[in-house]
Amino acid sequence: MASVVVTLCFVAAVCYILRWLFLSFLGGQDKVEGITNKYVLITGSGSGFGKEIAVQLDQLGFRVIATCRTKAGEDSVKAVCSNRIKTYCMDVTDVNQVREVFESIKNEIPADEGLWGLVNNAGKLTVGMVEWQPLDSFKNIADVNLWGMISVTQTFLPLVKKARGRVINMGSILGRIALPYLPAYAISKYEQWQSLWNGLSEDLKQEYGEEGLQKGLGCMKLFDSVTSPHTSKVVSGVIHALTSRDPGSNYVIGLDAKVMVWLSMMPACITDFLFRIMAVIPGPAPKNSKRNDSN
Ligand SMILES: NC(=O)c1ccc[n+]([C@@H]2O[C@H](COP(=O)([O-])OP(=O)(O)OC[C@H]3O[C@@H](n4cnc5c(N)ncnc54)[C@H](OP(=O)(O)O)[C@@H]3O)[C@@H](O)[C@H]2O)c1
Image (tube, rainbow, N blue to C red):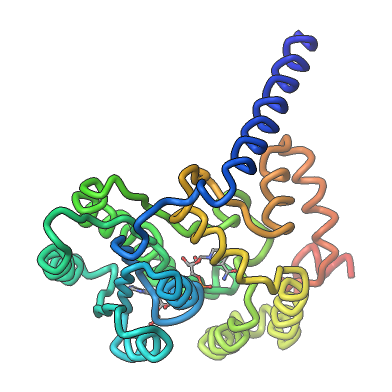
């Protein structure tokens, strides 16, 4: 059995090296052609990665259709792109609006062209302990990140199929492995944490104490310091997926994400052990919890 596994690993490694050599030999020829006539639609492109992707694709010559939740988002992306870019207001949770945008785009794209790329980028993230947030907040995240993504994909798929194009979903490594006490990894979420705290009932505030708030903020500072500042790597991943003749099915970007993928594949006893070690990171906990007892 062991020899079969070793042989399979060896064959896989040889195939990988041959593929790499083949693509290196091809040089620039591994890129798709006719970029200037290819249409790419991005959701949530008024800020963050969505905006960066829109700018880069526009510079490369793609015909970018940037959809944004608000008019302010539209103005913001328009201000940094060429006049070739088209923008639409589209809230991915609004099925009627998604359908209306689809109809407009269908009429705008030449009949023989479809949509080369659909980048499902719109997303939401909230921070805080599970009991600090109303149920509606979780539902809203699922409405945008999951149902919104499916609704947009279903609606635009006929155009993507016409171009034999590509759908790119921006996922999160936190979908593979749940971290203790937070989905919070962005410094921009500080304010959100604070306003969440302000809205807590007096009972919960007393239960966690002022240090609950401070530890939460400290926790985010810590996570912010370990996450990669190189956001351009994410944008490059999307560009590769849209321009390569041989795009990957998955792009895991950043060392932190790669480590988490390995962690997610380990037996639960190992991840449990690692998380127990991580529990020494001072996170918010009720004053009478076991963690605080041991302090
Ligand atoms: N940042 C990370 O470290 C990270 C890691 C893993 C995955 N991701 C994923 O990457 C994507 C982009 O992340 P980001 O960091 O650029 O986030 P971001 O800065 O918060 O941008 C998210 C974008 O989505 C838009 N959006 C939110 N709700 C929407 C809705 N209902 N309809 C249409 N657009 C909506 C936002 O518009 P408004 O500003 O108008 O609300 C914003 O333009 C997300 O899907 C996120 O889950 C991010």
